[in-house]
Amino acid sequence: QRIPSFLLLPLFITWQCWVAADAHQFQVRSKNSLAFFTSAAQHNAPWWSTSRRHNKSQLGMSLIPIPINELQQIVPNASKLTPTGDQYVTYLGRTPRERFNSLFEGASVAFLGTMFAYFISFVIGQFLATILGIIFLFWPILSPEFKAYQRNWELVGGRDLIDVWVDDDEDGYWSGIPQNKRGLYGAYYTSVVDDICVVDDVRATAEEEYDLDEFSDYTKTSDELETMTGIPWKLRLRLLDDEGRGMQVHARMSEDYLDLEPGMSAIGVLLSTSKEFDQLAGMTDFLVLDEVDGSTITWVGDYPYLPKDEFLRIIERNGVVDELLAEQEEDDYLDDED
Image 1 (cartoon, rainbow, N blue to C red):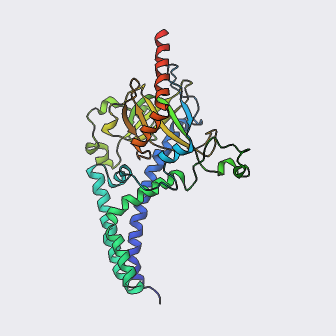
Image 2: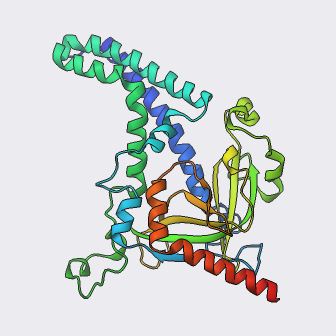
Image 3: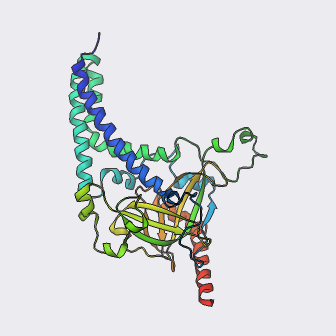
């Protein structure tokens, strides 16, 4: 027996709403992810190429390999995809506008979905239609959970996390598998903030940048650009090493970023399919620390991949913070000598 075409209309509308919402989220994520390479792309050079702005006094940018036991604790993986509270709130909405949009989308899907479940009950039966209707009814609550779960999965793409110290000669399992197909290696990425500015688009040129001081009274709830265009202001954070190699990171502008200053230390996690990290497969949000006492200033990123408390405990226990501050103090001493 064929299903009447009019019964498929609610399903089609529901599917279109989901696809449109997911496509928008993917577009935003793609822009912010590709922003990592924006500076280099503008100069037709790889991301590690020499930056135009060079400061010999800056701290060396370091990649510190992460043991597999630590990497599994701080990065979403196949056994740890369940969203945290911060990740759930990210998709639920942090501002009244975001929460309204999330609620409206969820309520629309819930209404159309329950209508569809009612009509389809004549075809698939009352029991299955009731289960389907309950899922749609609670979609405003379930939607942020599913989206955060999907975002966590996208970071690793279903790939395993691999210990960077695995020896091919000693471990015969990996000997016949190409390195770029084994999984993902992780490393702490330590650097110093070189410059901070605000842009209206991640593709904005240097001439279109605004000083952070101009946004001293900024709040996410009063974002004028978002009110007019639906797209909020973006923070642009430039990180440099002592050889002038740099990268830049973009994130939605927030009042939490108003205390950022050049010279502060930044730590994040980079993922790569290569032990040499010549190709990047993903990166997390960044922790920005005070250059003097190592206290937490803020977290920069559109999505909180890293569990904040766990990440802080680990980098304090393994000495990454102490080493970063020691190098910063040494560089400041050399500057004073000069």
